[in-house]
Length: 357
Image 1 (spheres, rainbow, N blue to C red):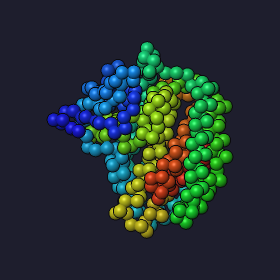
Image 2: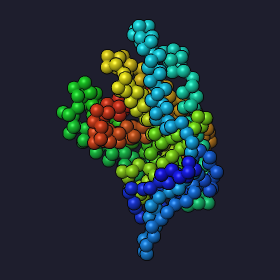
Image 3: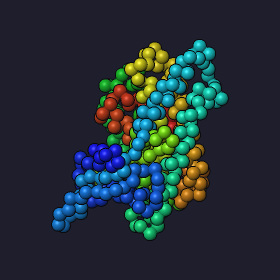
Image 4: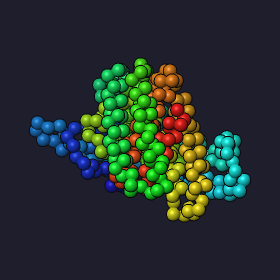
């Protein structure tokens, strides 16, 4: 609810005992770091009873004037990119090599600059969340062998769940995507091997508090800058799990996966002619891989030397690939349960991640 265009009151549907991470992180960023790219924390309403932790009922924040969320902004930008590609369809039809300069020209610099700024703000968010060693809830912790094993075991369990469901739902998939799904199912051991490489490294990169459910829909664009929203983490996970310290690369992987979702969502807009979609699919893949690369480079420039970034580039590559695969595997389960026609997005995502390894 918006009050007098100045305050935004957010009511929580799912009430749980304990400090809600949305309240906890918003308050910390406002009061202890002066990080400006979140709606400022004003207060919270708690339900308290004896012998139980307080339950947060709602959060009050400063309202932010914006041009809308970054998901919509991105899908619109990709739509314009597709129009430019289609204008040159005759010339591009036989284009086989990855067209570096041509791709830059078609994408245009405006969105790429936004992606760089978005990555910079993401890095600054992580630096702010890792900045206080005197607060036990936020102090960075070592990503030691035990933490690595725990992350890998969770990844392995998630892979097993998602692929069991995919095998079961295979007959329901359209014939066009069924072969791609089988291809990814056949790569189960390869995915597991990529994730298991986490155990072979001693990265010494710290675990910190992170956003936890980071994607394009969690940001507003003010016309000049970005504002990051919704720190409650993935709603399907238990409150205790959403408050764990994790690798910052988990948020990075979430945003990189979101670029692929935006590219395909723009491809499937009602205004798009069905006969153009097969031709544009390759250009969708080129767009999201290019934007992922731009985002990652800008993020790493912002966080150079940070305690939560692996110092060794091989360690960084292995960790990021594992988190990208884990996110895409999670998406398979989510899409099969909620939007089965979208399952092609994470299936193709996994193929690309394995190929680029």
